[in-house]
Image (cartoon, rainbow, N blue to C red; front, top):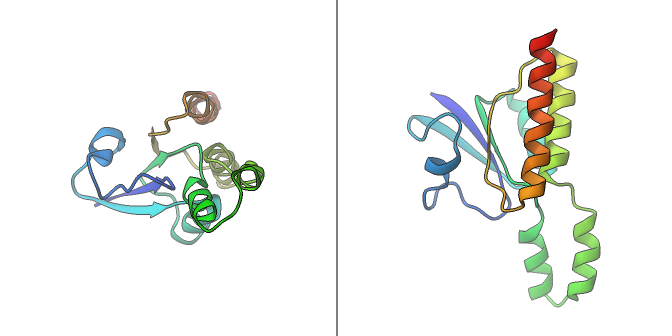
Length: 136
């Protein structure tokens, strides 16, 4: 059974057709692990090793922002705090460093982000690493 790491703070991989649409390793006979933040992402890989596939969202922290607004924090304060939240791109940068330090390939990737610029940045970073490894 293959393992998929699903990085997304809002999209539940167990509902709807998210896995069917975005999983780079198929949608049957896979073990899905849902992480919602940079810390959960890095901790999961550090503890469990490299999954067979990773699905990336770029804009993380929306779930926390909504909770803070509903609990009375001003939208302005939430925006300020959200800017400090690490993104899916930060996770991708960490992943490249992790793989470089261990001489590992990047697993298969999917990107379900609604942020087209963020998605392109993640894709470009990971594809550049793959290209660099193939050249060496």
